[in-house]
Length: 134
Image (cartoon, rainbow, N blue to C red; front, side):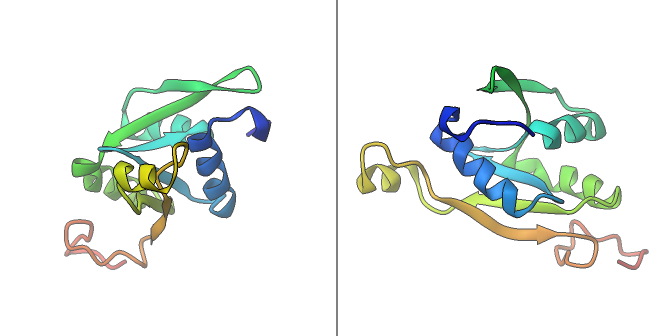
């Protein structure tokens, strides 16, 4: 992943800082009603999940690959990725856009990783298979 920090939007800068902390995870990054994946994560996830690979802006003159899934239906996508052996970091919005605006004109919504999903950390019944061990 090549990028020049000064040329990224604040949201992409936030994403890249989080991704640097979870390099070996697919990062599900919440943007509104969707979880978005970027760069190599997007390329992998789009292929594995059979979803559309698109682009969002650019970095170093290169298009940034992007794909996403609706947050309300993310569990089925997460289940498939976990079954395939991937580790997933879930990054959620920690405040609303209005709360961010109250902090300042150019403030972006605070986000952070709130959950790491691996076969051994799943506790949601909807992600567990009752006939298999984790």
